[in-house]
Length: 139
Image (cartoon, rainbow, N blue to C red; front, side, top):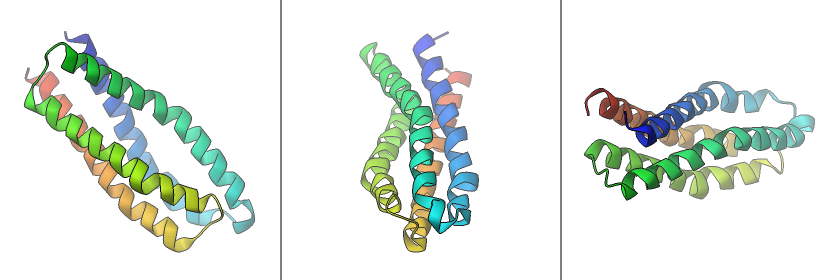
């Protein structure tokens, strides 16, 4: 079995689980945190989420580089990498700035934008996971 591909897919599916949890559970709950507690709570959320997400993204990027370096060019892998690239672009261009704005305090408009725009990352990571499952099931 292709070890780098298994590692890549495992990290992708861990991220799929995390992003769906963020989308359906964590992000909606932002609105339920009291105004006085929100800044500290949000800072803790960002720190704790980064501890989970950053290593998995590094595994994804590292295993992708490994796969490409060894000559893997299956269209499902490449499509998944396109999804990952779009997720990372959305993260740094959209979600990180929205979180920066929320770090100053809860703003319902910014919060709704975060929830709405995060659907793109949710769907893209899920699509990447599906492509990788297909690649693993039908090499």
